[in-house]
Length: 282
Image (tube, rainbow, N blue to C red):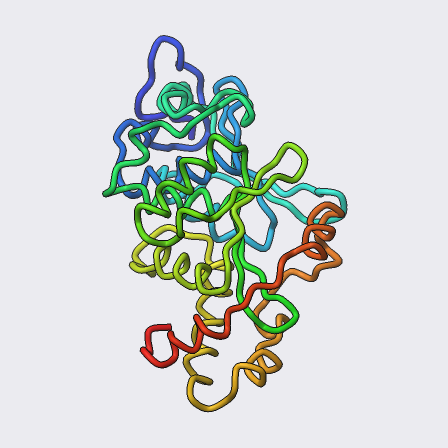
């Protein structure tokens, strides 16, 4: 059956096979803020077409997006990304284009500048950051078994992200934004990474999120809770192996990310983690 999007205009009178609600970005709320963050990090607009492409193993997040735009029958397309299975969802919508352009989409990432002030509102910025983190951030476990996190992007964007995290007491203001080529990163210490996880996932499962990243964080926290008071931190670090935590093998990372991994700083986290164990707040 041929249907139209729910908000046709003179510029949007094209036909589409799959029904959808093209007003979902017209109002800023917790749900739309998450997807604006995700699209800002990992999507792009080409003309009137919105495309979201990710690794096939994260298909759950595209299914959540189809639920958000009320388009359950829309196909998820598969393609090969240099030997790694990838998937994407495409939506042709003039309504999406106009609504998302208000937040800087429609131009290249390097040209977007600072984050739109509306996305920094206290009631929705956590959702926006979770979406951005799901697109351009991640957790990893080092050789000792400690969980770390990082967020990537261009410097103007990361400045605002850092300001939010400092304001919400996830990061200290002294945290540096580091450069790698044209891209910048915020790298979190082990204790900061645990705070970030609590900050992003405090309302799970009643939120949109990329479940693989949540599961990695949650598996680590569960192991720390199970081991608290039973093993020394040294023995804990030998017990928490990356393989148990469903990590992507380092050999599958691109060359730049592999080199960054080799150059990562080793943080002193024993004191911070011991304090968390004592307070039973991990």
